[in-house]
Image 1 (cartoon, rainbow, N blue to C red):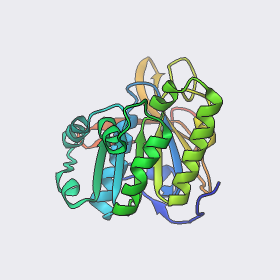
Image 2: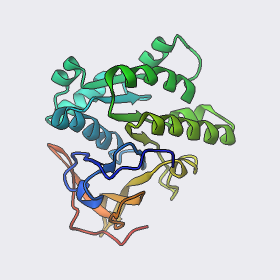
Image 3: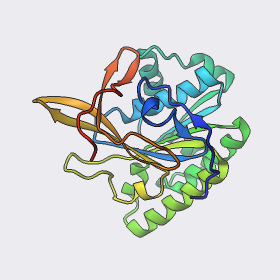
Image 4: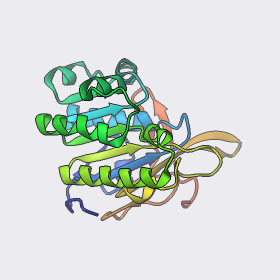
Amino acid sequence: MGWRHSLNRIPTGIEGFDKLVNGGFPEGSVNLISGPTGSAKSLFCLHFAYNGAAEHGEPSLYVTLEEKKENLRETLKGFGMDPTKYETDGTLTIVDLGEIRQLTEDESEIDFRSIQAMIDGLIETNEVKRLVVDSIAVVGLQQRDRREFRRDLFQFGRFLWEKNTTSILVTECSEKGELTRFGVEQFIADSFIFLGLDNVKGELTRTIVVRKMRLTHHDIAVHPFLITNKGIKVSHDVKVSEGR
């Protein structure tokens, strides 16, 4: 939908996940990650950004609207992914909400326009290939008009497609069965990945399912995953269920 159709794949670097999606995200696509609190959404995205810089030399930009930059650095280091070298050479850039406001000289509530204004220059200057925005739910909570939120989100998606970056947008959901916070986010994305916390045989289990991915023959089963000392490890050959 507006993005440059490509057979090139952008691997996430997450063990087991890329096997579910034919090698990675389609190049230039806009992808959505959702799940409840504690489902490892940010860790998934950190893998994606770090792997781009460390393994492929692809300039990666991580925009956080909730966490402080230093917290994300410490998370990466805790899983053996030290970002220092890549931040120094410019292949990995992490920007937090405070910096967005400073760069745009706007102390008002954050919205998609101010995010776009900040990242537009960075994408061009750094020739960014991978982008994460974590989390767009922050923007939605500040916009009372849901139609306006959907319109602005769609326009932001078009901006990303035109930039031809491979992007991940993060949203959230409650544990009451909703897939996304506002019920519209999944419709603007080329792919939709859901991370869950499910009761499997009496134990709380982390799960992942690819609900959609355009131009991709992908697995649709629900798979368990672990968080190891190296980060996320998806059990691609084990199924919790046949999908949802």
